[in-house]
Length: 238
Length: 112
Ligand code: SF4
Ligand code: SF4
Ligand code: FES
Image (cartoon, rainbow over all chains, first blue to last red; front, side):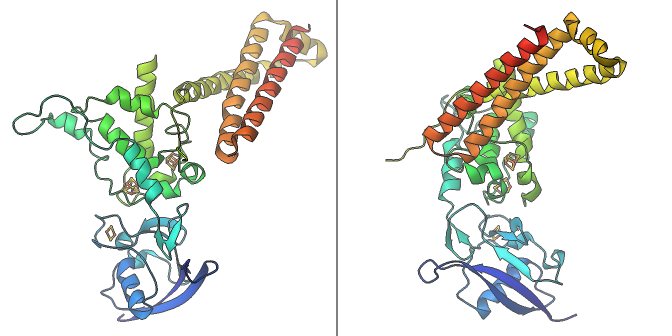
């Protein structure tokens, strides 16, 4: 097997030119060395350079090439082309629920606003020690599965609660980050963080649908983190 | 200016209440699964529903059901109805309906 022809259906929309979005049919020949969807998309772009999408690291670190692939959110650079059925065209759409800037590029402002709202930094008013704030290995262990988030937005844009209330619901990515700082033994603002989330919208719009867990390309579990925040709130309240 | 204000501190209370009322309803359902097959005809139903414990359990069940429904239905309005005035009206209507149902149920249970 040297070259294969892969069919695509791609969401196209240029607000300056198009009255409304449409789906473009396009196909491309790929070689055995084209392993990931992103490799193939780069070829597509060489064929039709008007297609717009974001990408940078091409190894699942920067989080910029999240899209909706055959109906499921994921990173193009981590999706093996062989994992997609090739008997029908591969359907590429922008992440759902965010405004489209052009083609596969969405406006992430709302997503990052929610991320910033949880104060994603360590709050500790003690004078900084000479070298660094230390943690025991067990305390550090608590942060595993939380700190690895690359803010790709696959999770939040697959969450129905985030679709309906992106302005008020923090969303799975933001809540995972919130718990990352709540769980950090060096942080001194735990109660303030819990106070901030004790709100019918910010945290409690999550109805444990678990779409977020299903799509996270880093294998993280926002639902579990959300559950732990709720547990802490219950412990604090009763 | 269009600022989004959040911070109504009742998220946890309602979430917890929804869970607790769900447990109450599940327990009542179990109770009924045990009790109902022993019931025989109208007199049987009368006897069952005059039992003090059953009345108490039924009352607690109705209250749980109403509270549970209140949180659930309000969540739906919060998700899908954006204009504040319309939402407030729907909240009030839901609340009134549930209070009405609860009162009616109490009347039925104690045959007032
Ligand atoms: S939790 Fe996963 S899906 Fe969500 S933003 Fe982080 S890496 Fe992406
Ligand atoms: S579990 Fe919560 S945060 Fe995750 S997709 Fe469902 S509602 Fe959204
Ligand atoms: S290109 Fe950086 S995560 Fe895919």
